[in-house]
Image (tube, rainbow over all chains, first blue to last red; front, side, top):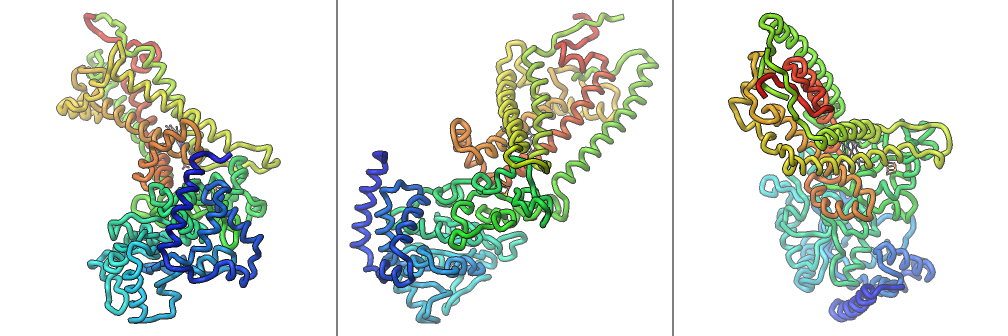
Length: 392
Length: 222
Ligand code: HEM
Ligand code: SF4
C-alpha cells in the first residue's frame, strides 16, 4: 500500500521533472548509451535504481522517477569550488575500481568549473566560471570542498588570476546559486584546517559566508550521499530535509553504532582489547580500541564505500566519527574510548583527573575529621556543651 | 538540663525520595562506568551472551527512575504540604551567614551561623548544585538514550532535545559531559556522607538518623 502522501509527492515530482526538462539545457550525454558503453547492463541499472530509491527513503513507485532524474542528471550545471582542503573528497568520488552507476553519473555531471579536473586553465578557467554564473543564475548548484580561512581578513587564501580571497569567491558564486552543497568536513565546519590550534582561523562555508548549506558530511563522504542529494534536488526542486548540522536526514539520520555489523558483539560484551588479538581475529566490537560509532550519525554501515565493498569498521579499525562537527578535536584520540585533550591537553583524561580529585577529597575529609575531633572534642570536655547552632 | 525534644524535619516523601535517589545514583555510577569501560566476556557463543546489553538496560531503567525522582523532588520543593523548601535552598544568599558557615567548617570559629531555614548556607549551595547536576545528567542521558532508539516516548523526548545535542557540540560531547558529571556525583557523595557524619558528631542532633526517622533532636523549650 502506498500512502496518499506519496501519491501526491509523485505528482509533484512529475510536474517538477517536466519543468526541469523544459528549463534546463539539454543533457550533455545520453546516459543510457553511456551505461551501455561502460558495460553496465540494464539489469544492473535497475538494481541501482531500486537501491537509490530505497536509500532516499522513497517507496518503489518512485523508481521510474529516479531513472528519469538519472537520465537528466547532466542537465544540471554544477560549479565545484576548492578552498582549504586536501581534494580527498574529489578523489574519493572520482576513483573507483570499476565504474558503477554512481561514478558514471558523476562523470556525466555538467561540471562548468572544477579546479582539479577541468581542462581550461588561467583566464580561460575564470571565464568558464563567469559564463556559468552569467548563463544559469539561480539554476546552477554550487558545490564547495574546503574550509574558508578568515584570518588576516581572509588573506590566508587567495585564488585565481585576480587573487581573490576565499570569502570573495564564495560570496560571488553562492549568491547566484540555486543551492550550495558542502562536500566533506572542511567545507561544513572547517575540518582539518580548523582543528586546534587553527592558525588560519578556518571555518565552514556557512559560517564564513552567512548562508545555509546542504552538508554532505564525511572525511571523505560517500558518493551515494552526494548523488542521492542531487537526484533529490532534480526530482523535487528542493533540497532534502536536513538535521541540525545541515546534513540530509535520509543519509545521516541514523547512528553508525545501531547499524554496525559488529553490534551484537558489543551487546554480548565481546571487545577487541588490542590490535591483533583473538577478538580482532573474530571480528569483535572495536569500542575499546576507540570506535566512535556510538556518537556518529552516518549511513556507512549500510552503504559502505568503493562499490559497497567495505567500510572502516568492517576493515577492522573503529569509526573516527568523521561526519560529526569538530570531530578532530572532540573525538581524539581515535584509538582510545574517551577523549583526552581535557585540561591542558597531554595524556590527562577526565578519569585520571576524577580519580585524583576523589582521592584528594577523601584525604581532605579525613584530615578535616581528625582536626575536628581535636578542636570540637576538647570543647566537649571543657564545658560539656556542643558548639554551633548551624544545622544539617 | 534542657530537655531534648524530637522535631519533625523530613516528611516520608522526602525520605523515600532521598534514599531512592541515593540508590539510583549508586547503581547509575556503577553501571555507567561499566558502559564507559565494558568488560570483555571471553567464553561462550555470542548469541548466548548479552552482558553489555543488560548493563545498558539497567542503566537506562534507573536513569528514567532518577528522572522521575528528580521531577518528584522538584515538585516537593515547591508544593510539599509540610515544608516546601525552595526558599531554604536559597540560604546561601545570606552572605554574612555563608561566611560564618565557612569559618565554622574550616574550624576557625566554633559556632556556625544561627538557624534560619532547613539548610545551612553551604548546604543549600551544595544541594542546588546537586539538583543542577541531576538535571544535566538526566538531559544528557535522555539524549544518549534517544540517539539509539527511535520510537515512542523516547523519540518524542529526543526530538525535543536534539537542539540541545547540537548546542553541546554533538553526541560525543553530550557523552563527555555525561561522563564528567559522573565524577561530580562521586565527589558529591564523598563530601555529603562525610558532612552528615560530621554534623552528627559535632551537633549531636541525630543528623544521620533523621533521614530515616524524619526527626532531629533539639535542645530547648519546644
Ligand atoms: C547519577 C546519574 C548518572 C550517572 C552517574 C551516569 C553515568 C553514566 C556513565 C559513566 C556513562 C558512560 C559514558 C561513557 O560512555 O563514557 C553513562 C552512559 C549513559 N547513560 Fe548515564 N548516568 C546517570 C544518569 C543517567 C540518566 C538519568 C540517563 C537517562 C535517562 C542515563 C542514560 C545513559 C545512557 C543512554 C548512556 C549511554 C549508554 C550507551 O552508550 O549505550 N544516565 N552514564
Ligand atoms: S564497532 Fe563501533 S559502531 Fe560497531 S558496535 Fe562496536 S562501538 Fe558500535
